[in-house]
Length: 116
Image (cartoon, rainbow, N blue to C red; front, side, top):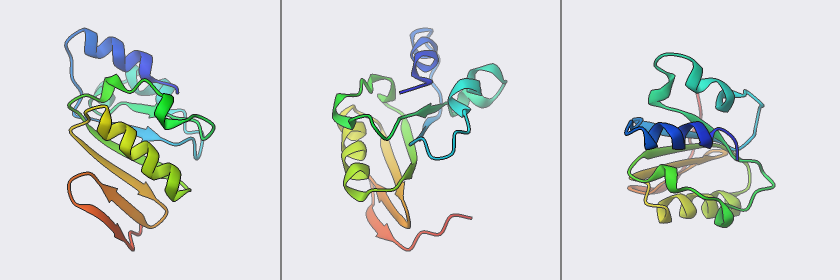
C-alpha cells in the first residue's frame, strides 16, 4: 500500500479529507506520491493498493468516516474482498468499480457502468 502514510499524518493533525481514492495499481499514475504536494488535492487523497496485497491484511484505519472510491479492480472476487474490508474498517460509504460493475455499500451492485 502506498500513499497512506501522508493521509494518516493528515488525519492525526485533525484534518479530514472529503473522501479517498484507492487505485488498484492499474496504470502507475503515481497519484499516491503527489496528492499531498498540491493545494486542493488533499480533499481526495489517492492511495495505491498493489494487486499482490491481501485486502484482509491491510491496515485501513485511515478510511474511518470517509467516502472511499475504488478503481482499477479486475477480478470480482478480489473487488468484493477489498470492498468488504473497507466497509469493515468503518468507511462512511464505499464505491468500488470492477470492470463494468459498481459495488456500492449504500445501493448494492449494478452492472453496465461505462466510464466516460
